Image (cartoon, rainbow, N blue to C red; front, side):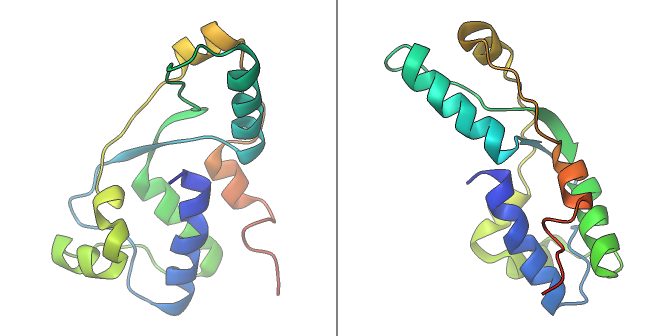
Length: 136
């Protein structure tokens, strides 16, 4: 699951709960890429890629999960604190393993091999923009 797909799920859970969305011991980092950059990478992989190759669509190499939670909490006016790992597992359900994973990643080889350069906003800038928190 791409990070942009996960953010709306986190936002929905935050809008319904006052429980802070961060485990006390979480020090994990997530890679991220803007959806337009990911789409451009898919096109380049189809046009220039080598069959069987793996390409990493990473613009933000390691965003601390706490930073993501703080932006979401700030935008929704929900305090960000700490919950136990057990509570985090219950709250995030099937996403709990993903939420707890420290996954700093790079796309250096992808950029070299395909000539790909992400140009979209980073995840934190995107979350701070109007798209995720538009009035309904």
